[in-house]
Amino acid sequence: MLFVAFVIWRIAAAVMGSHRRTEAILREIAPVTEALERGAEPSASDLARFAEQPRTRNLLLEALQEKGRESLFPEAYASAEAIAESDLVFWLCHPNELQQAPDETEFIGRFARELGRSGRRGCYYLFRYRVKEPHWAAADGWMAGVAGPYLEGEAPSPAAPGTFSDFAAFDARTPDEHVEAVHRIMEAKGVYEDL
Image 1 (tube, rainbow, N blue to C red):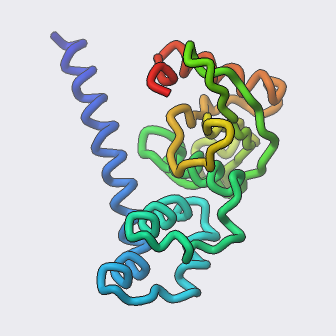
Image 2: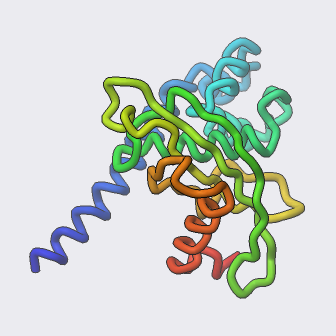
Image 3: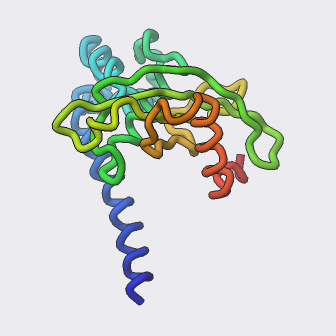
């Protein structure tokens, strides 16, 4: 009984944490979303400011896409690497994960993998990131995080099914080993069966 209660509590905590994280970022980008709701043009400075920040970038893009206004998204932040970076940072901001955006994020490379039995190929984007004191993970230095996979030949979506970090030290594995570790975890969970 206690185990079942614990599992239910963990699921509920994860769902509520996701909701709180998303709501906080939506409040932050409200100047843009409220302008869109009024049928007004969002300010270029707000668009640039929210697109520049990996934490708000993808929710901004999704809000613009929902209104058919993705052409307003600043081109400088529309690259696959920028979308993947935002996907990872958004994941890290979850209360059950890093709980905040990293202070530094660096793109390392792009890695292709076959996705499940579908025969489709996807690309993962590997990053290293770190946080500063007084964060609990500051002593860990550079850690590895993977965003993806994004289906080859398609533009990256703001949220990929296998974005993940196990908070491993970046130097603990080769870049390919970091990607392979995440890929195998997601395969075991059956994440790619519906692709």
